[in-house]
Image 1 (tube, one colour):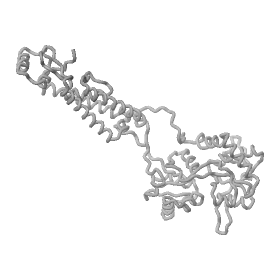
Image 2 (cartoon, rainbow, N blue to C red):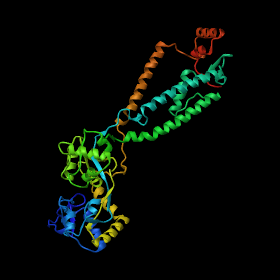
Image 3 (tube, helix red, strand yellow):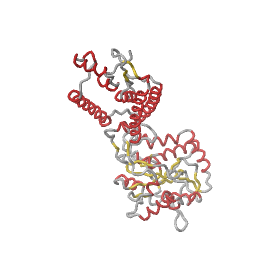
Length: 456
């Protein structure tokens, strides 16, 4: 006979079969522990009958125990196949097998709403300080290239058809264009000839290579992942605030853990739970889960990680687990003190763990039979298409660039003197230009009249 407490997905009542015949005996139940008991029965060659018990078991004031622990002590059950936590207090009165599942106390909260990507989400791979630094470096490199080219004789070229007139291709505008071309990985028609200029260019190209590679590596994640901002991330976050209430099951090892803990954070949490009104404790796990689902992100429930994962995979899929486990413990099969079944069950549990049966059972009842298609640590295999909201900022930048170009074009036509090559100048303009050259105009003034001329 095996005592058991009804808790999903460890043990649940099976629905009636299609033929309409009533279910009897152990066939009335299904779940993880039902399959576990069947596997142990096959390996140890014994049969069993489930006996349902309301409570796991706690010590009463007169020294006796109730629940499953009490039935074992009174000889009313031979073993308990249930999510019964192995504790030192219980180990004094019953024998436990090796843990068939390792768990810990975890935090359940209501799943926060997903944050849709912003218009300029493509800029999020870098923080604002990084973008500012890149802009500053771009300006500094451009000015450095301009100054180096001005002082280096290798950057001055002789203009054809103009005798000894010298021309420098790295004007302030061309210097900025050279840096911009490198930053956009497109290059430029201008190339430095001096050693100093090439050192600046080489260092800038290497900088751009690393920056662009880093940006591209992080861009996909920021464009495709809809992130969720959780109000809390750990037990420390819960202990430091008072806006979000939190509690445990009214009776059980989880509450006992906080009650007896000597850790400052956990002691603070227990004092908060016992002094909060209305009481944050739940009579059953289902009640605590329902309270989380119906809350407006102002209640958290503390329960075993295995149960937490199970309910997170059940509809309406509105809860989630946050933070690491608060402690490490395990579920074990309990037998009366001195029972001959203990060593046999230990052997069976170890064999089931080694051949992967326990892992397969958990995968089946937690995730394969889940209703939310989620598995911790598993990435979604479906390919996601980018929506317009993911890349709308790029279109805004393009439109802004086009509008700015049109405005600048109008200003150049109507407000700035039109610049043409000498062969297209009128005879009167040629005489004016020759006059400028005759009086030895500096290269800056010559550059204002003539277009850029490449090396010939």
